[in-house]
Length: 508
Image (cartoon, rainbow, N blue to C red):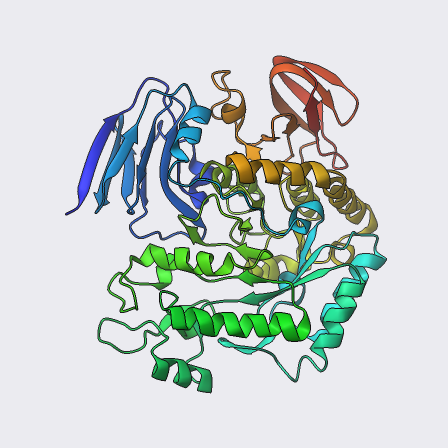
């Protein structure tokens, strides 16, 4: 039986939650808005939580759909109990109370994810993942003065989907390659996914053993995704988990791979009537995928359901090489939404934009200013990730600004790591809405600046051509990266040339 409730909105009440991709539309309340969580149909993290600046929250263990319209919040299409709580002082208190449903587990992902920049080979090499080119990319990172960190070898290093072995034509000596990457100071991740190419001996074996998801007719389900048509591992089956773990552990043992990027576990590729070892909702397959990946401390996910509070690196979905809400303009609001849904260990998309078809379309005329602002916006996130080589696609001046952003992240590394440990213990977001940190100061709709922890206010430039920007300073004394001191509360227009990422530390 589907359950539903309607809640009358209070005066000046705003809400956050649901899906990370809707961060650009948060807070909800003023305008009509509708979102389906049953099932989730967006390409990023989601959690069945809604939080109010008036100290209220909604939770259900089951997916629901919701709508804001005519002064009402309507929750519907939910098969489970809908929990409504109120009486808390503000957004921060409501979030703290709601964590009974997604408590932090006390653990963090691999510390290097926070303390140094990450590098992903996807945009730089796309499907042309080859041993020599990967080594050239890594050597160039070091030769151009950038700090080593995590290096992710992306899709097409493998023989096939489900055949998790280095392709012998593209990788002549993968062990030697990984050893060299380690010598340079990198930890190495490999891309993987829960799909299996149907025209393979692996598929035939997995189908025979009953390790694949079946459709309602009882045949292995073949689903279209961005790389074609594939079967899907049934991760509700312990035998499937054991098989998949054996594939990945072999890579770790034989080649000293350090971790994995887990991609393509989106709920949209599953059906509620799929036949699995356990009968679960389509959304829960993303949850099972994340549970599997959690056993590797060096991990990254893009799609997730109800795994908030866990030691998972959560990347924003692929962004366009653009200034708007499909590109740079989404990083702050969607990154903040991640934190407020319990996904504290957040990473923006690849600097310059990781949506490869869009990047290809713009590759002959890249916006160097945009690339720099992407890097600056990412610099004081919990994590930052390069892919397209900035020394290759930018002139020396613009590359230098990106290098400065990367160095800033590295300089803040231990402070960011301390915030990660704090999040693991308390569940508090690492980056925070202004309204979360400074409730009832008129900052509810501010989402182009953020707090890193309690004390660092970060105000990147996210609009083309801007060399000044308006910053909203809460109560307190704030010392800027430029040495200036601002007494809040106030609004102040500050200089923000392309060389500057404005940030301020709270002094009192």
